[in-house]
Image (tube, rainbow, N blue to C red; front, top):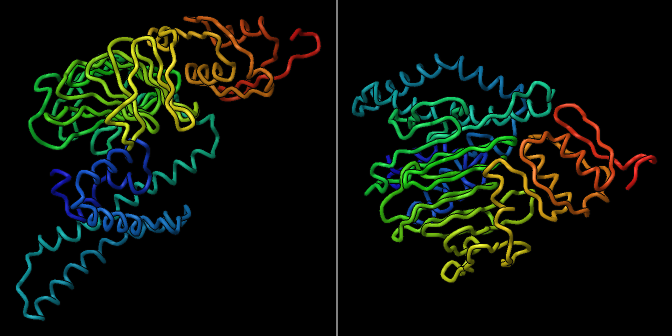
Length: 419
């Protein structure tokens, strides 16, 4: 069923809608905000559905672990009460002389309510457990995995050494995984009708992953990035993808369907070109570097969409402190990561540390703040993190030590070292 055909109870029982209300992220918020804007006639139903989801989730009164356990046990133990309620309602209707209601219709009504309630409780319980586990022994944590989230919220682990078909929630084959690349079917690239169906790819620190969309556009996702995108683009609709992190795009040319990379701070619109977009939350800025073609950038929800800031190859558009600035840059510095290289060109050390954290999936704590203003230049390919730190120490002295759980601490150098 299309979202445009949904009634209030359909929204309440939809897992992606529940996620927006209870545990949203940038991509989920962008999708639903845009959908509501395109469907103003559904605004009242949306608000009622949101209130119902929050009520069922006890949002205003967070439950303790004991409360969750009690609630879940009550659901399990409530089967007899559930059946008794159906029989009692049927008996009351008969006493009132009303038309006899088939039992299966009453069951459908109760089961739908129960399914929604149990689904939301499960979602909240998962959120609750993630908080509990997050405060536990970090040595118990598993190695982070690349994941693919389907349109129904199902999460699949992407084994980088595997090859096989990718199926949608309904079992239909939509693409193929070839080790570290996911290729979506490119037959019937532009569907004539229907709602856009989205998947979300999440790449943790220490990994990269490639993606070929149904229109043939090639994307490389950098470490610590998420991309939400349509399984198949719809004819007459723009090609929009939602990025949190960093990715390099080679966009298939299609003059009738502009391609837009949506981030929190700045959107990049193209028709067919090669460019890099970086929008990590802890970088405090968003930028686009153009390698080939032409792009325009503009802040989200801004009149500037009609007159975007355009850049040419070799330029970078950066959104910082509420403004977009354009500057000439070395393209290689911003694209070397797609070839497995770390390329630093007169970069501040604090920026370098963030890139090292993403690339090696470590936490680096700098207790020697004077290092942050130091600038370094260098290219690394196969070097281990410890070797890279040793090279930096040849330029500016500092001590470092390894802590537990991929934790590295940088300290001021001892007296026998030269600064």
